[in-house]
Length: 281
Image 1 (tube, rainbow, N blue to C red):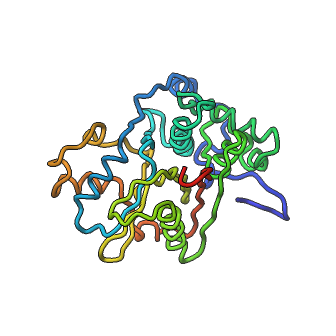
Image 2 (cartoon, rainbow, N blue to C red):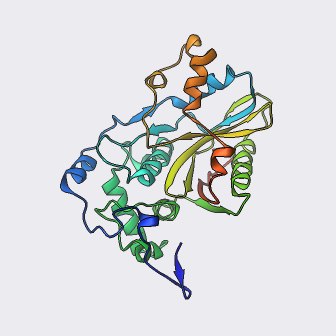
């Protein structure tokens, strides 16, 4: 967040991407986003991940978010500009499965932009308008602040956290492990919880955390949905036993794992957790 003399100032290309000064995205991209359907959404991935983890003898303990999580990816030809919105859609899809008020269809990127600006209009994280110059109809990158504004405006409680410094990656993994492990007292090796996924912002990209695993070596890895890539064809339907064994299973899991070494490349992270009401609900 850029602050000058105690006041917010406009962000640039480093934070907002190459179209930081854009006033209106090209019409063909706007139409692509407006006509979006469910073809870039895949349900049932988390149960498949659980099955893959069960077959990995190197995993000592693993926790996964709710089975209702939906993996979303960017559309062909939309560019690398809307990952923040795709992660918001993933959280929205889980919430919609529990809250009829949100409707059954995920909002388009353009609708999310309008909702975020509506949130700014009523004073929720309204510094975002100063920082971005407005996002409606543009390809400016968005992150945790905009996601928080969206969900708070819908009366959905959420909690943002910042992890920074040389041990930022350790702080991040500690927080994620506590978030998932505190939701269950099970002694099982692989635990499917009712926790929401977590929105994660790292420099210049955002992803959705759907779980964490601890290896017998002591190393930890986050399990993530990255909207920059489409799910492998195999995970689009229930996996067979042979799909989960040996190199086939490891190859599938590799797409979803991010190691602490990977996160160690970055010195700052922001997360947004949806605060669930009731015990593990």
